[in-house]
Image (cartoon, rainbow, N blue to C red; front, side, top):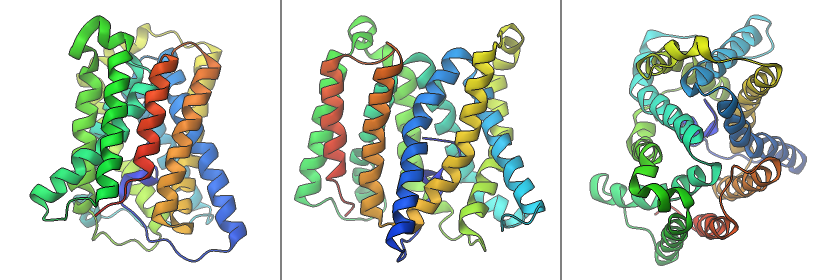
Length: 311
């Protein structure tokens, strides 16, 4: 996931769109989403300070939106204390999920993150049933979730890090999984009644502006501010950071725009396709990826997740 992207603040209802507009929105989002995760991994590999990297991303997006509003290019809601208070519980969960996402990318490969993320609907569906009174998934979705679970277990079984270090190898990604499940189950519902004049850029502005402080606090608590002076920034590192910041802005817009143009089911399938492209890109650019067998298990996990429909 990218900071402040369309995933961040619940679902927007799809509307009727001209085929050309829908196709353009899909292409824009697919291009950003497929590359974003890999670029974040590259950036954090070169600058092992994930909290500070995400602070820069949040700040860049915030400044871009404010500048767009000042120039009259963007229609953006103003920051108000009332809406900020409504957003606060969600922002806590969002910042934790993004920070832990960065820690996973720092210590694990992209495929591990995608595998655990794909398993989240399994827990969410159970928690929805237990605590929110929703129905259990239909049989098709139940078997889809079993496929996700089988793919995840197969991936773990052949992961070299798991074989070397056991369950301890998955400390960061397990914490990420717990937070993302909480975010999907409860946090998004906390802000479902927040109304914006500009649903896309209003959500982007609030999510990014309110996340800067908490993320900086997490970075400080994890010792990143102390380590930062010792991190050498070469031209390649700066280029990677600039690229991920630019992509963060594009991801914010393209994700919300795409979700506004196509149905929720189509958006879900597109997300699966983007993750598969991310895996392919990760394979092509370097050797920091899972084994071929592990990737096959991951593909099973992703394809199964595409068959899941919410009860």
